[in-house]
Image 1 (cartoon, rainbow, N blue to C red):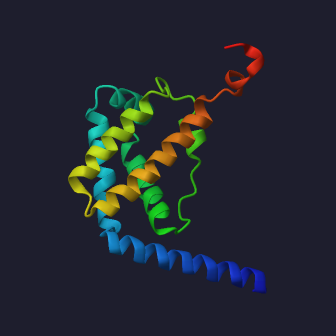
Image 2 (image 1 turned 60 degrees about the vertical axis):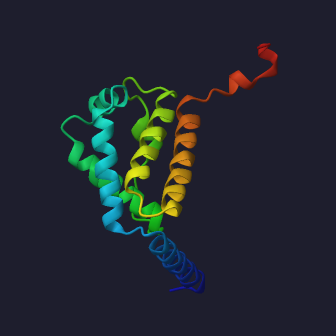
Length: 154
């Protein structure tokens, strides 16, 4: 292995170890992430506005989606790099998807964390992360730079 590759591997391992320690201090483990995903998406499915949009896309594929979301959140929390999905592409062309759904998603996510997060730190970390994800997806899916063009005269 080249020195550069060895350095990258060591850096990655150190990041993962630090993430595991940080998550453990917050009371976050794989079991919590599984519970978070299961509880949250159970609520999404029952939600008047979010439920139909998600079910339209995931009908018959909910178990696969749940495993993918557990992998995603584990990868983000523990910095494993195990998740290899493409969230922006996965959300493109979803029937009924609109920018105003993301605040509802965040509210439901926060309510779920209010009830099950092991610590306030865990709640804060997951909400900050979810907020970044929601902003990124909103910009990627709905932002039109033409709206910022001063020549438009808005």
